[in-house]
Length: 346
Image (cartoon, rainbow, N blue to C red; front, side, top):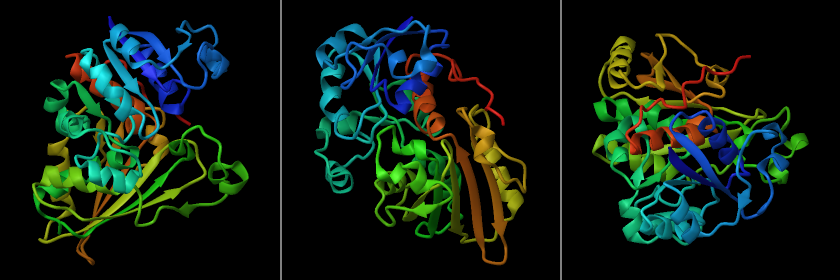
């Protein structure tokens, strides 16, 4: 059994990791760590876990964690993983970081967008970007995984096949993304107060969201050339889910059937990406609680644009589920181990 430690177990991504790992056939949830609830049971924070056998929450000590786990998931705020990861890696412990600390190759870019001190260059260069469907070989050999952000996951899975095809102008991408409130984490603030967000929708961090350089970096890396993305996120009054509606200007005449064939070929054999039939309009409800990304494709011949619709559960495929998928690849396990859950409905 793989000994797993989870740092940040009292957050949404942390408790979602437990939901999947508790039923994983090759894993023992050996240790849970928290900076705010040391010594408590996780059931005292999440009563739905009452009577489920889990270790008590322990203090965060990198040396100790490195000695007692085979892999550690870091479900931590930005800036924390950069401090903890080197000590864990030096113990030979594998690390899957769910924060943004290792996603960007450039420390300067990270500092500009996250306003935090970056990790050292040696660790940034060692980190593998854990978009399993496109980087699976590198993930399997990695010691340090930068788990993608929720918005980038939905966006990149939706756009990479087209970016690689060369059919779309590389500087024409427009991404309109909408997320449920759980993407903001479990912390209390006015911005996620019920009476402030209920029956309302609004854009935020317009032309300045920290996931923008991550999307451009990875889209460009896959396409082999620079990509420019206009990314605008919106907050909607629901708990889970992301809907990305992305637009690209076609540089050649292609049909909806051409695009459909491109995507069906690109994701053949990829168990968690479901390319929907032509004319589909996937809803976030249709992937709720699951590790699926559903993609639908449309071509507007009048404007010469391709429109990509992509939906995920932000806490699962956008965080914990994708992290478990990466762990499976790192340890040579079936990619679907512990993750084969049908979406919740209604």
